[in-house]
Image (cartoon, one colour):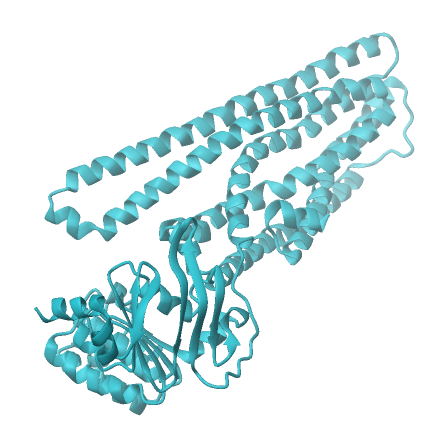
Length: 574
């Protein structure tokens, strides 16, 4: 049963086991809800029985009834408390574990996954979908299974006690459930449409926030609001459609259940007149029919909620079943040479890297150059296993990086990308990402080498200044220098620099180049730059064109034999 729950609801083994326990406790709770009916049966047996001449085993006094009622209430309270702990506490623990599990899986997914999904979509799954998952699971799933079990047991008891009245009581239940199951397909289709439209609302909202400068500068506020209201209106219509489909099927099924009380009344009256049953049995079956139908009405309502759960679980399964990047957790390279051996890589049907082979040696600077879209940045990211290649091998010190856990592999890399990512924290915290256990002296050396000290003096709290989301309070050059300071602090044996000084003025670029020259001694360095003067002193220059190596060699070698390289030099000097 646990395996079924794990597959059906994308649960962990512990979560599935807790769900089984919650179903059991809820089933017991359902049985305790019959206690009032049992007390009524005892009372009617005693007082109606005396009228009808039916003898009871023992006549109970008022005090006896009081003790029984208090005992039953106490038992109901204990069972309800036990059920609450098993159900709600375990559901919230499981949803918390799911969030952690998804977050851990997201860390291990290749960047190609994130290229196909936007951040709003992922964040919505992490927060919105799992919150909905919590709500539905705590209010629906265990109740459905528990009510099914308890109703089945009660049904068998009713049929065994009086088959004809049992049938009169129960015939409406399967028909009502059939109606609910038939409507579930329509509900699921409507729920899926609403989920898509709701995502579009959040996507549009995030896009508007991210592009607020462009929207204001081009006077697009009205168009942006109209587009958002249109998306919101579409989402609202789909949600209303979900509610309409659910309410119609639920209402019709519940009305049908009420006919069961009528059938019990009619059949029971005929049997009483015919002398087949006494008044006590007749009244008790009328009471029990109400008790049986109430949890069934709950199932019918919960079935509508389950339709939404299917969409949520499907999205969670998509993340959980994505192939993650794994590998060995120990790495002992003989050196830090990076070797590309006939490497191919592409996005879906679009080829980006086609048969690339070269070696970036330790102690040398290897520069990647080429026109925009030639594959320079992709090669640098492949070296750090941000993506897994389609064909070929990438070796680090003789070890195949596809067999190494990315987290272990990246400990060997210091990376400075053109698009700097900073956190809404202090400048010091952003720099310390490079080395969390860095001392104050380590941080100060990195700050001085990256020339961050020049703008830190102007900050209200110096290095402890909070810089806003993605460093919004800093200029492009200041953000770039923090990124360089981060790499200098980490001091890893391999350095990847993608347009590392692109946002700096000429004077600061020259100063930081001096700091970088100290950083790269005896290290493997891969540099990407459009400013040709920054790479002409590289030990090896790899010229790329349409994902292939056009030529490689030193500056002098390429000048002597590559017309493409000479044209690039000429263009950069103008």
